[in-house]
Image 1 (cartoon, rainbow, N blue to C red):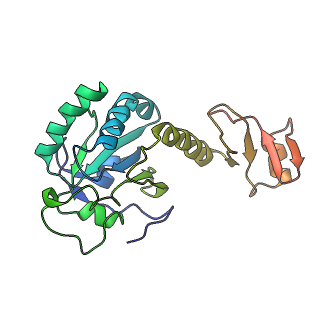
Image 2: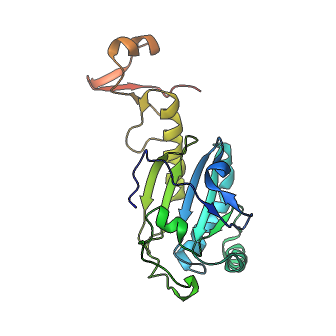
Image 3: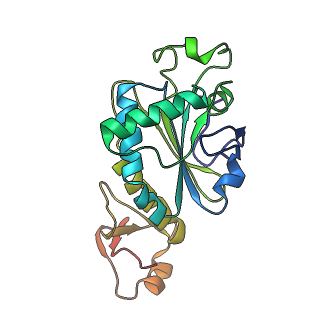
Length: 220
């Protein structure tokens, strides 16, 4: 299954380290980040899970829930959490899905449909496509998809930056320019006419070209 931005995120029920969940119900009125791992006790993912736990307050502040996924069973997740705490200083403080039947991985196009069998017999290389990040909005639609290779750790600071942009542009008719960060100038969306923009921004805007209308970040 190939998913795209603005598709409805596939709903599912799954066992997690914090109990059984229904994904859409679990999201509720929040935003969500679903990020996957090829296998427990893998080195790069160990660093990622620890860092995500460290910066979880930043996601909380943005009303974003975090959930991880591995195809290994729950008891393996528990043992891995101890290693993550020991080596990274933080244990996962968010649920981890035990996708032992590969259902979620297949729903999200992270493993091919024919995959089957005992997940403990699979190697990280077998699961290398299970290394994605999905940001899902309160409307349960996919807002961002990131896919990483096995050897490159993910940048979760970038995920936070994109969420700031997604939440801002959901509230206001603006776009964010290259390398934008919270508090910096934004661009009036192309769908907004100059007449409409004058009502919203009576002090005007900076326009190096007519199609690039730069204004301070809107409040609220």
